[in-house]
Length: 113
Length: 110
Image 1 (cartoon, each protein chain N blue to C red):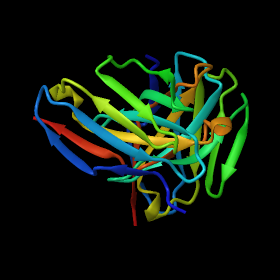
Image 2 (cartoon, helix red, strand yellow):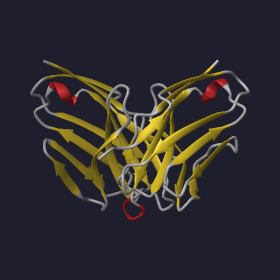
Image 3 (cartoon, rainbow over the protein chains, first blue to last red):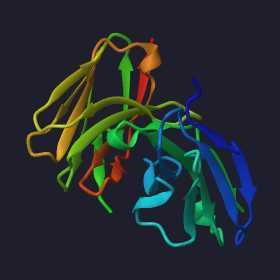
Image 4 (cartoon, helix red, strand yellow):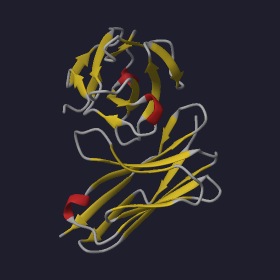
């Protein structure tokens, strides 16, 4: 049983560019959440998707957007990249009724130059 | 956003010792969770707490949901080298949002 997978593993972009990160949830999970983890910090909640809709959003600007597909996989898009967007981006999946019990993927390390 | 403060920030202990760390918040949470993160990996859920005063164990790990709903602690008994990592607390409020603490880095010396 595959756990949460994310791609790519690492990514280097320059300021102003756009990036798309991908996440496949654990088998059977229908809810996907995205987090940003800066170096030395705890993860910060970006948003959560369920039934292809954004169900909850953290304190992140509109440059951060997402999508969930019918197979429950998800994408995180970040436009107009800033140096401060450099971080580990984590995807977590869960069952909707057990949303507290999230399983995290290994993350995508984004570096903005 | 919500601020969760964890203490201590880092710990260096001998193998076999017990460990205690805690997490405090200025806000009330409905759920407290404890995660462990190893380098290059995502956090792994250790324990979930759903009721104020709840005490839950998972092997050598024990965690409690504070009575005020603004704090939680995690104890690790008889530490072993594989306990090394960063431990995060997280709280969830009625908005289905999760707030993570600043982390406690644990080093176990064999």
